[in-house]
Length: 334
Image 1 (cartoon, rainbow, N blue to C red):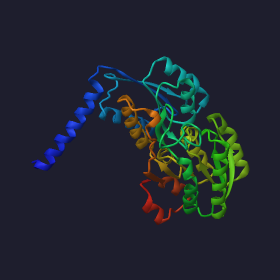
Image 2 (cartoon, rainbow, N blue to C red):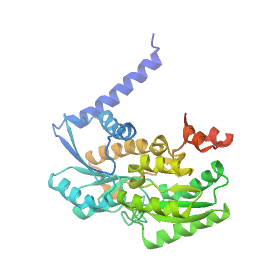
Image 3 (cartoon, one colour):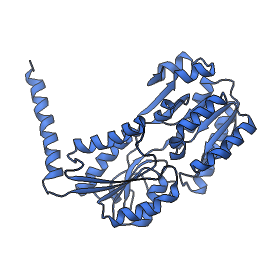
């Protein structure tokens, strides 16, 4: 039996879905999305992220193969591919470009000032010079800001909680975010101060492409750090399995930014959900299709963070995760 209130709610929900579907299909138009991504959905974890985007579009009335075409292009950690991909998408006359990193957004901006660009997973888009402000982007770019680099101080604190003996931290970073020199300097001072307060020191190791991993490994083995800190960037996400295996072999607790990295075997991850961000991105695509102007469409700032711990890796490293950290965790992989 369904009571009257529940039935009324179902009717309203069905009407909303029907309305969305009608908006997506009534014109007979086949919408075209150009997708500039980093990591292709060839593993279950990344396929889940991609699925969240496609399913969100479906709920909004856009069904691939019916009234939607998605042109996918994945750089696989090689940002130099983005300009050619972006130019190709413009030639294909897509209605919107979705870009999942600052270099992808920048390449799309250089390729077109007319086609709307919806960014997602982009850390500090104002500091990177991609938009004028979060409240009023001012150009053809809007979407979802990651702001994940601002969480590196918190990641250091969590790393200290689960690996209290860690003092020298190898920080795998990159210039992938494209921040201005002023913003980069300010963030450097902030995290250096946080590390000093925690009794830690940071060894910065640059890794801008997957090909840099070999030299990064050599540097880490040579320097003998106590733990690893991974920046939230596409290269670290693409190499998550390789980094996890290397860290375990070297007996190094590693702190990452994405759930998918913890699933790959990295000890702990703290940051925004990529799946949630892509669901929000689908909503922005819908707004653009409905006629919204990206110049005045405020950029979203997700606030839901997830803490994921790999219990198997902790056991292999001989670490006992404090109960206070376990209670805060959204997921513990056993």
